[in-house]
Image 1: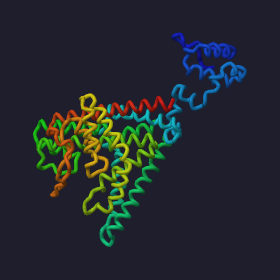
Image 2: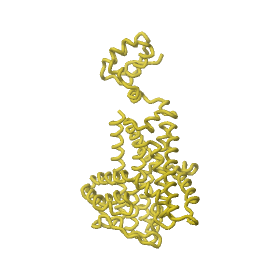
Image 3: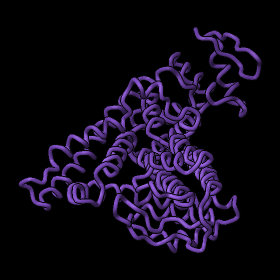
Image 4: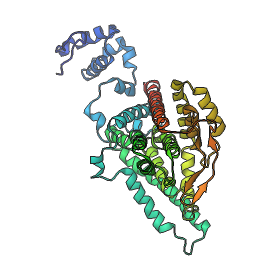
Length: 409
């Protein structure tokens, strides 16, 4: 016989089967009694077949099984493989709330733990595995000899759809591992802490001179860094932070909430493909166009959500209206249909100009400046952008908690 008793005292007293009915009725009359205690007693009621008591507890008897599960205390079974599969991958309204709560938890864990070097020195990161898959397709399908540009483009589109399918399958299989496996995967694939570390390293390197800073910023951008001055370096770091807040944090979280691990893995492999083969150069203009366009589609909503959250974060700098104005005015003037929105919002929030011409190899790409009337970016602006990125993530986490309470209750 398990030990049960009144929750109003500092200890639990054993009750016998003969006293079950009396205790259940007494606790049911007490509105301050914990629901978990009532649920446990109701389960005992069913086991002891005291069915006549049900008529005296109609509101408790009417509870649906999934509500009871949410009220009951978590047990080891809740973390086992196949546990709560519907909440992890399903499309019920409550499932969206559960996954939103997991996003909030994963963001907190990512902020605390970051990327553990010891782990990834012994195990390949999932993105590294995605890269190997993409590289295999690139070597075998992206051959120019005997293949027309249209043929390579068709191959690239098929490859992009296969990447999407691979992500869906991998995510679906890992979902069978239960909530703990899902939470670990989600935490690993959110890059908020890593983004902060890399951008902060650029700002710190400026204390040591331009050469160390050029090396640091070269780790996170694809443009040429050899002739960058402090303003160029700061702009590159700030722009990367704004764009990758969407690519590395909010977009993965968005697709996880929407479709669970299958959505998360599908997004990440397509986004990785875009970063590897989505270039507009001679080698990838045809073959990489499928991955690039698919990535644009998957980021359509997250990028604009990111921009709005940066605008909201600028409230703490007293620049929310200006940030919103610059985002709406300049966000569309970017080679990417998505990257310009968070970058323009960041330019208005910091009162610096961003974007503009940049050099890739021997080629200079002309582009419009965002918030052209703003000041030149510097080290202080990088640190300011990091604060905005953090506030935006806190706001997003708060949104996830609100979704958990509103939808999963």
